[in-house]
Length: 316
Image 1 (tube, helix red, strand yellow):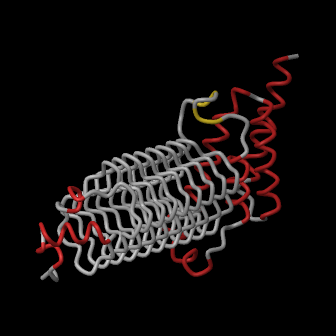
Image 2: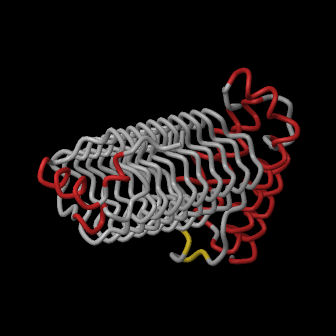
């Protein structure tokens, strides 16, 4: 009986794989959903089917063959979207009966809908996900280094410990996203919306956040050395214990921001609004590069002008 059942599954598997090569989209979609049913029924075929799916996506939406086309339309093909949906709702996940990572490296997935899906630990290195919908998605521990996520919707997304080094997130919506422990070194977040995002212990060294919205964000104990926050909005942000060495806060709104125990050595605060900043001390400000034209509480301004008048001079 068991041999007979396995034989039937093998036949169904071969037939479904053949359907993926058909020129008719409806037949390819039938093959995709047939493979999903087999993966749910047969434990030994489960992971090979996941690898078939990811190989299909890499082959049919690779950067070399699809980037120019996707850049114009940002419309993802029906079969690629169907596979992503199937993978995203699969019965297992990394560290929960899966020991390997999904490989979607160098894929063109612009405009894809990955809302409420599970891609923990997946490899998205050099992937193109501009305008993608990743609302409430699970990408914990995924590798998105050098990925393109311009204009993507990542509201409430779970991005804990994600590798986003050198990634492009310009204009992305990251409101209330979970980025605890993420590596955002040299990432581009210009004009991104990070309102109320969780950014504890992140690496933002050399990152670009010009005109980004970081109001209410939690950046406790993060490494922000040499990052650029020019004209950014950080009202009510928490920078407690963070390394802000050489950070550019020029023109930034830092009202009511918490600076307790943060390192501001060499920081550029030209034209910044520091009114009502919390736990911002004379000692911290005495180590900055400049506070030219910055808005300060009067007591701090008076003390600094008396002791460090050079800080108020226009920078060269």
